[in-house]
Length: 453
Figure 1: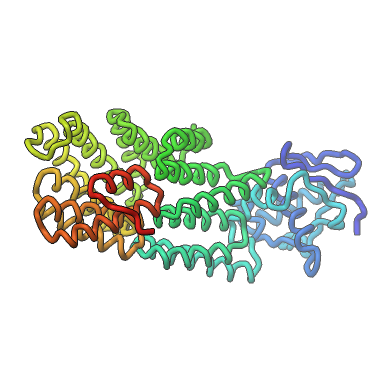
Figure 2: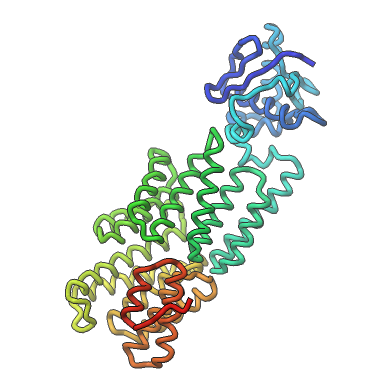
């Protein structure tokens, strides 16, 4: 074997021999050398880390070439390097390969970690470059992720969490683990387990940043989810800052779906802080981007959020008049009707596309607006439907909201007062579970309730 050495520098995109000679490589051949070096150090036993024409063809800048063209180009390069005494590539067959490096693994060094080299080559997303065992694991991973997504859309959060955890354990690459962890964190947030969600996202951030060539898109997705968690915890200032951290990572890049989610998140913050005009502007931006990607879940979320802005605008008018239920101004009624319209858009889209059952906030929105408009029959029907969905999903926030509405409706209409008190007590307990102190204090004061737990 050749006793020479090779140093791979992915930070400045160079390949150097032990004597300092820098190989004059095009981008195409740079990726080839990096991949062959990676293979030689990772799979030094057995076939010695040789790469087939099929594997090489899927490397960056090689995709347009046929197998024969790949083989001929490598062969010509080998002959050119032999003329200068610098050839380190060997082939089992001159054109057909497979190809490898004629350098001992211990004499190959990199300026980055193995994970960073794999990400530079795009190996996380190239199944064709995996071993048979890895391919089998990949298929099981895909099945678990897919099953988890199906359970999530069906509102079966516990089963969804089990599938995503199985995918996390099955995943072999950093990219796969990040994908699973993002979903696990989202499930914890939906279940009201905010501490678990935060721990998941923090472990994700450490995983991503440990890689010197870290995935900016994965990090942006993480910040987007983390920002929404902060919103759920009512830390609006930190939530807005975190959304802009995600925004900064993808600014100037074409990531319509993620950008749409960031716009949506920022709009939610502006709605929560009563900057309604700003909120509607960002929601409109989000809706356009979500439509480009045909993201039904994203579109339904924006529909709900626009409705919720109009609901808040109606509430603001009521609040300015003292908060009484009688003689609701026409402007407030108009806002509540608009909120119902947007809420129904969300319900109808979710029903037709089979997404969104992990939350019943759209039904709760509609119920609340009918409650304000004194249409108590419809208000109770939607609150009951929201509650049944929340019981199935285990979404603590939706359970709190729906039980509160059902209790209030019974109180106002003179219905079963024992049942009303039972619902309000359950609402209080669920708000306490998710740490919503303001709602807890309000219910305790308004209905003379006390916490049992």
